[in-house]
Image (cartoon, rainbow, N blue to C red):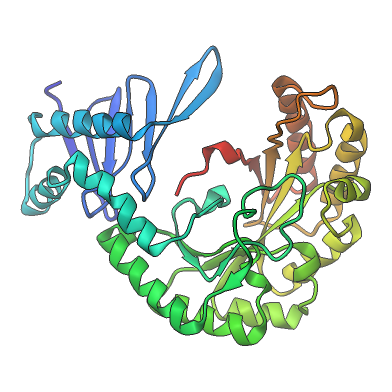
Length: 368
């Protein structure tokens, strides 16, 4: 492999020996992702390594044990240390030295720095995997949906403005020059946008002061979000909020009740309409295969009917998330059946909302 190249981009450094291997690093020199031997490796901010490959036409995912992660880092860094990488200017030389300054042991130590700043980051929407996550709250205000276990280990709580200020400073220091890779702010945890005006406004102001120019995103549920007026959501937009992420799950009211999630299709329509009136973008999540065969037809029909009513525009996203369940009984769909349901929903929703992005949201690929 004597044809190594180095690309010093604005927010990332890319090294490659050939078309079969590509290695990317943030401006601190920490690995971000690499592709080699038909495997994709991605590093979380806590230095966990997530891998993905195709076996028999299916994606196979894994998180490497710490010892295996250390060995993967060692192999990656050894390749680069021993490679004939052409360096043409001082900036490239500096970037290469930053990369080589990271030992496997030092990379694994990043998990301790991460854990001093963050409590567990349980889930993000895919368009926010490269966000600056700021934990304004912990947990979820409802936390009783039967399908969700993301926040069951914590009570809902909110940081004070002073605590949030310190958190933002800690995140800034932790990311360092790697901040340049981040595209937006995501207010976590679940339902952070439910906070009262007196609490949420100072948090938004603090977040955008620390990370100027970055749009703000966050989760909220229908039955909490609909309590705000369009004017109130407009105020939040003026403070930097760009997109609201909402788990609608289904257009079928009976299925919502079965999932123990308050609300209805009519309330979902009303809330999304309110957000659009306020000039906000939305990202809506529907669960594919929820309720299994028992609810299959009404879930499909009602979800398509709801999507056809929603005032979706360019910049909006509809996520179709394959339902993950431990239920192996007759009520559950097989993986192939879920894929078929996803294809049907995707085609019909794209017809209903041609300007919106309609795409898969596989929670098993979450990484931060």
